Image (cartoon, rainbow, N blue to C red; front, side, top):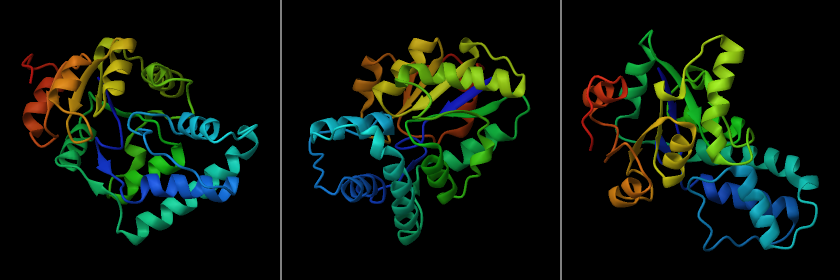
Length: 232
């Protein structure tokens, strides 16, 4: 069994560090004001958000500036997380991750739009070891979020010799895009309303189960491991 977690809105909330650090890094790198009103970051891939904002502001050849932006974003995010005492863990995440990590029949992974370095930074800031997640798919690993679960499954097989079929994998996320990528890959999806989306929106996206948060560890383990077919 492979459990693939999203980070922002699912495991933790990085605000106020996250988006302001991203935008400030863009402003500094491009030496111009970057406005992002009306653009939703939730469920997006960081490189695509970068390119979209560059396009909105008429930036030519954004790839020339990307590496410098990415480094600066990491620096600013690290400083901001330190200043606010880390990201805020969402309810139940520590207990659920601990329970899953302790099982020999479960592999933990990530499906996230974050850059690897900033995603790991956020996870570490809530006191969870990023190395617990061995099958990872980051925002830099595919051209769309739909492809990320397949990346994680392939990475698990090629790097660690563990073959898990999509039907034995679950994506846990907080946005319709998390649900969509799970459905596209043939995985189950567990959606949480700890981000910006409610039960109705997540159910409409096709989530297999929707819960308020990750607090009910035992019930969630039953569902994740296939011991109960109950929905929510």
